[in-house]
Amino acid sequence: MTWKIPASTIDRLSIYMRALDKLGLDGMETVSSLQLAELSGVNSAQLRKDLAYFGQFGTRGRGYEIKSLLQNLRKILGVDKKWKTVLIGIGNLGSALLAYPEFKEEGFEVVGAFDNSFSKVGKKLEGIKIQEIDKVEAFLKIEKIKIGIITTPATVAQEVADSLVKGGVKAILNFAPVSLNVAKGIKVKNVDLSKELESLSYFLTHKKTV
Amino acid sequence: MTWKIPASTIDRLSIYMRALDKLGLDGMETVSSLQLAELSGVNSAQLRKDLAYFGQFGTRGRGYEIKSLLQNLRKILGVDKKWKTVLIGIGNLGSALLAYPEFKEEGFEVVGAFDNSFSKVGKKLEGIKIQEIDKVEAFLKIEKIKIGIITTPATVAQEVADSLVKGGVKAILNFAPVSLNVAKGIKVKNVDLSKELESLSYFLTHKKTV
View 1 (cartoon, one colour):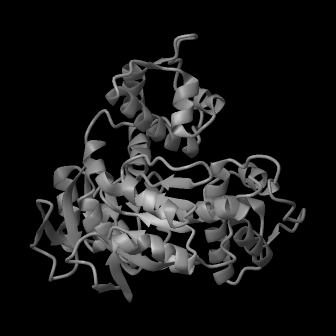
View 2: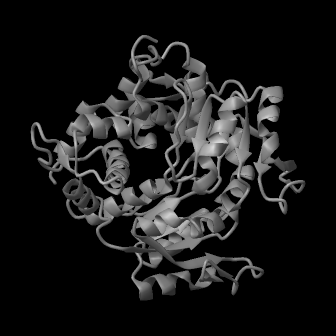
């Protein structure tokens, strides 16, 4: 790929994948761009533009072959293979994510859980033993893990991020409400749940006019 | 507003707001579009385009007044006022969200928590008493609540959504991995945490070429 794909396009590929998954489960074999766009909550010009970054997938008059487009999207997003991840910070949110079945379904398996609390270390959650945070770096190296998930309080998130990067992690999903400083070439994705509520308050505020 | 604003623009307004908040805390008074764009992880043309939907905010050569732009964005997103919300499903994720300080900081206050489990009903969490799910409709009407958050298992999410809508809720933040059917005029925002991981696996897969 020689040009930069917008982050919003990547986000939408996931949405298209979910819609195609659903259509496949419903026994459908092909779908028009109009239908797929509608199911995904975008307009069909946007859908076609997003897919055009990656190739020519549909057939005029016939639409998209669901199975084939799904395989292509999985390959593009890199979820045609499995990813091992670690989760740091086993509070309520960390525990919820450990038990979040969609991660595994989409190919992301949490294989290590870490915390700094003596009351948690050694306990098992969802079949995974909670380990001391000091052991994360070695664990990452042995398991060759590239993705880490941070669900710690904001105060320790940077320190945790540093350990992850030292252990060889290249991509971090950060739920702590703090912006992390990492070396170039490391990707951080911040999850901001308030943003989702803000899009709803926007909707409620402009309800009469949009 | 006479034209449709893209959802991705609304998402980015939240991001700009966070960046401006941070700059304000750092004691800055103005910011260039280049700086603000960089802090927000977008290019400055995108930033200017996003803001242009809502008016003329910056001054050529001087950039944006942080305080004033922040106030404008808060007003546009409807977070210049407080929103009361309810949370349904007090498992790990629901408990985590009840304790999520950013919701309150951004003006969203969870005032009611509901569950169907006898072992949870009556207990207090984060100062909020967990109530029986049967009582949600009446509660919503009395408190005139417009936003509901669903963190139940997928199997009961539709039923819960129906109760919320009957109670007068107009916007739902849905964490259950199921697509909800609601009447026209009701907004549902689905939170798909796997999507965030997929943008990381995309990055890792294309790391050498992007």
